[in-house]
Length: 410
Image 1 (cartoon, rainbow, N blue to C red):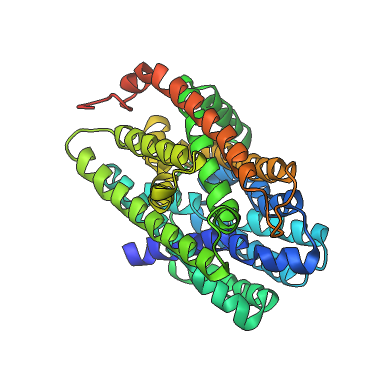
Image 2: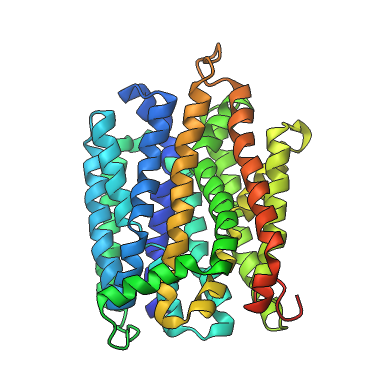
C-alpha cells in the first residue's frame, strides 16, 4: 500500500523540487541568451513560487473535497504544459508566464502527498511518512544540480524542458492508474462552509504565532537554495560552473539527510511523548546560526554553513503533523495549504527582493554581482527570521495548550 499510495505522490514531489530549483543551474544560459538583469532573473524564477502560493487556498479546498489523486493528476498535466511553453519561450515575459504555469501545476506536489498520508497513515507515524515523501523532493533537488548541468550542456536547456514536460505527464498518468481512490468525507459541508472553515484557520491564535517563523525560515531557504546560492558560489566563493553545480549537489545531499534524519528523529521523539515542534525548534535554530556564518563570510567554515543551511532550512515540515492534529483530518488539507500559502508567498517575495537588492549594487569587474550585495540581501532576511523566532518563543504557551512545542515531555 505504501508503494501504491505514497510513491506516486513522492514522484510528483520529486519533479516539483527539480523544476523549482532548475534555474539555479540554467540561469547563466537564460541570462546569456535572453539578456536578463538580476531583478528580471529573480522575478522570472520567483514566478513559479508566486503562482504556486496563490493556488494554495483553492488547492486545500479541492484536496478536502475531491481527494489528492484526481487533483494532483490534473495539476501535473498543467505543469507539463508549462514546461513545454518554457522550452519555446523567447523573451522574459514569455518565460515568466510559462514559469508561473509550471508553479501552478506543481502547487499540489507536497500537499497532495500530505493529504494522502492523512487518509492512509496512522497519526503517530505521519511525521516519518511526511519526511519519506519529502525526501523525494531532496532527490529532485539533487537532480537539479550537477546532473541537470550535464544534461543542459549535452542537449541544451530548451530540449531539457521538453523532456521534463514528457516525464511530468507520465507521472500524472501513473497517479491515475496506480493510486486507489479514497477521500475524506466533508460531512455534507457546502463550499461556502469549507471557505468559512479556512477563515477560521487563519484566525487561530496558535496558527498566527507559528506562521511567521515557518514562512520566513522556509521561504528564505527556498528563495536562496533554488536560485541565489548558485550565484553566491560564483561571485563570493569564486567557483566555476562545474564547481557551483557540485556545491549545489552537496547542499542537495545535506537537504536529503536533513529531511530523512528529521523524520526519524521526530518519529523517535513522538513515540516517547515529545512534540515535533520541539525538534523543529532545534533545527531552525541551527538554520539561523548557519545563515549568520554565511552573512559574516566566516570563510574557514563556508561549506559547513551551507551544508547546515541545506540540511535544516525546510524542517518547518515538522509543523504539518501538528497542524493536521490541531484542525482534524477533515480540515487537514486546508490547514496545510493555508500554511503553505504563507511560506511560498514569502519565498516569492524574498527571492524577488534579493534580486532587487543585489541589482542595486554595481556589477563586479568579472561581470558577476558585487559580493557585498549578498551580505546586504541575505542579512535583511536573517534579521527578519530572528524577529519571527522571538514571536514564536514568546507565544510558546499556546503550543503547550495544543500539544505543541512545550507539550508532553517537551
